[in-house]
Image (cartoon, rainbow, N blue to C red; front, side, top):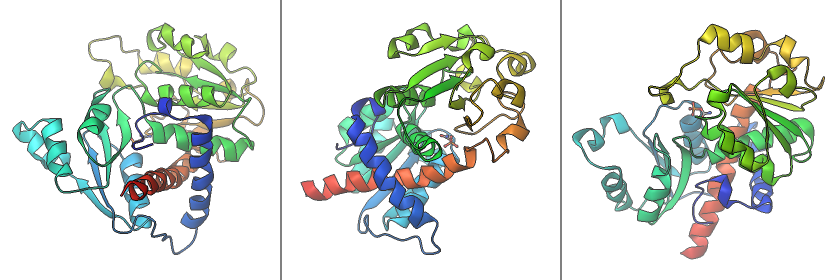
Amino acid sequence: HRHLLGIEHLSPSDITAILDLAETYVELNRQPAKRADVLAGLTQINMFFEASTRTQASFELAGKRLGADVMNMAMQASSIKKGETLIDTAMTLNAMHPDLLVVRHPHSGAVDLLAQKVNCAVLNAGDGRHEHPTQALLDALTIRRAKGRLHRLNVAICGDIAHSRVARSNLILLGKMENRIRLIGPPTLVPAHFAEFGAEVHDDMHEGLKDVDVVMMLRLQKERMDGGFIPSEREYYHRYGLDSEKLALAKPDAIVMHPGPMNRGVEIDGTLADDINRSVIQDQVEMGVAVRMAAMELLARNLRGAA
Ligand code: CP
């Protein structure tokens, strides 16, 4: 592959290859000296048109640990503010010969469009409600390490599915790896067509969580509910917030996931989120650096092969 734009373009063996390489980087990242120079001489530019903590920090660390020259464009201070378009901005940076472009954008499809215009490898760091492929890959690595496998698991994805690129990428990835998926949320936040991906849909946590192996919670994304129905946080927490009482319906060894940033007391109880016996939220963050190192290394191998 030339780019990493979405899980929809990856085969099960592509997914396994990324996760296997990421495993080696999990070990490296735990060493005091975290260097592997597989991106030495390459230039990585990070362009985030939307807020980020985990994805931006981990892409930057991933590039630096692999020896790339990494530049973070401060999009708020760029000529976008003077009316320059996304494509003109991308073409301008393209003329400086980057090798890897990491892009987050609020509009679905914006990253695919940009990838058609530039000569370098493009990694989608989240576009609107479309895809967030490295998030699904880091979630997959977290699940595989916690459960010992990435197939034939019952996975519940809960909450604001309608606005979630994380849910969409996970649904595609977990489906490709032959897991059983349940989507749980209020009907206003679970689009009916998502059932086409082969998932069961529930509007009651008590039904949906029964005997699942993995519980993946999602943030209520108010910034994407322009003009639409916004549920009251109190009511939402009562019906759809994950606490230890609702989690008791899942398998006794079920793990709790959340991509972050989380709203404690809205979609998840803060004490449960911090319970290292059940919650793998910090493992997800750790896996994020390793998965992004692996994804960039694999794209760089293609760049070098094409040179
Ligand atoms: N999970 C995730 O994408 O987090 P950030 O928005 O902080 O990057």
